[in-house]
Length: 506
Image (tube, rainbow, N blue to C red; front, side):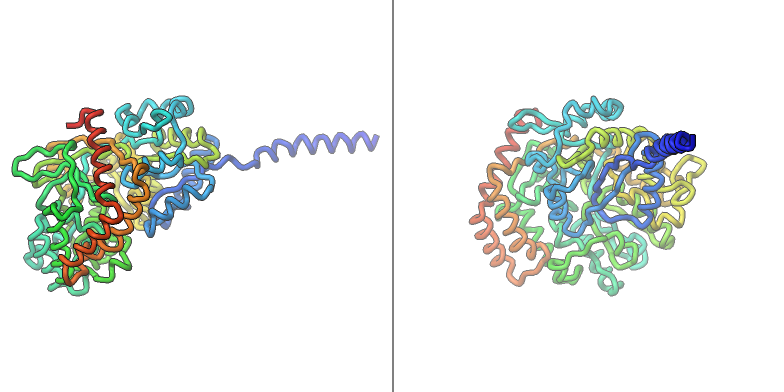
């Protein structure tokens, strides 16, 4: 009898323990990589995120970051390293189609509609078309495009209050940008006037001239407007890095002039500065323009308004002088599923949840409600003191925006400043971007050689680090042409013209 009772007890214990053991099994984890730096309160926000994902999707998420320092090398290493990654930020500006052609991203054709039908339906077909890549094996969908498309324009952020204090012009032309920086240098010697001159000095030309796109690795210019009143066209293409292009020569002359004036640290070429917005917010920087747009300006205005209420921040958008802006590409910010993904179908379900769950969207975009932000009487975002550890889009989830979920638009003084510029942009003539991406395959070795020559011989000239520009420029072209610059540019132009003809781009 005792043996029977003992056996019954053992069975009951086993039956009782079995469900407990099952409940303790870990949920599957979706591994995500974003570009940029990890915000201070990331882990706190991710706890809330995972509570929702566990309940709604039956999984958790691991959020990881690829920092901006040497991001290109780090990104490529992460994709080719074999590590399991389920979702990764990708973008047209980060040569995403090259990675897709090399097979680093899964083909999502038919997979999205099957695994995440709501996600498939809510993103417009035009955006899916931008995410479609022709290959020798047929067309593939290589990423999930953003559902957020708006007018875009690069530009310059500057200290408007210093203009008023020292009677300086806004940097809205090449000459005025020179006078503004000169005034900063003379009146605020503790500040850098500029940090971007050498990294993107070709943008200097956008203050007085117009071109729709510049391809940095090949030195190609698209849509340049040379005559007053000329209508910009995406079908127009020419060589920018060329001794015959006056804008290119003028860029280098301007960079030398600004460098000679001491507008930026001459050591930046060997020790480039990351975190321009941080330097700006700490009062160490007069202006910057590296990769800016109206959304980044909006975030900067909010941060400065909280930390420095006595400052005024101005923004000079490129293109408004000529009266044109263009839509951002749906793949300017996007999300890919790498070939090393262990849970691709689950990753698509997570993306569907991010795009359809407003609470989840707000966590990624703004942080924790009533801690990192509050909502005003108009339902608009208002930052709290804790926003310094997790501000708007601190997680760098630019690709996960959904317009009708936005909380932006608080009726504040700084919001009115941003709205005024947005109104000007809305009044300009919009242009739709193209979905072209250069296939480096036919000239891959030459592209790599040209990029190396540009880095070694042209970059110093773009920082203005030359005593004899003509002589150094001659050396650069000798090296670049020997590396294959002309062949690379000719192949780019050939492909682009075929693309324009096939797609009716005029």
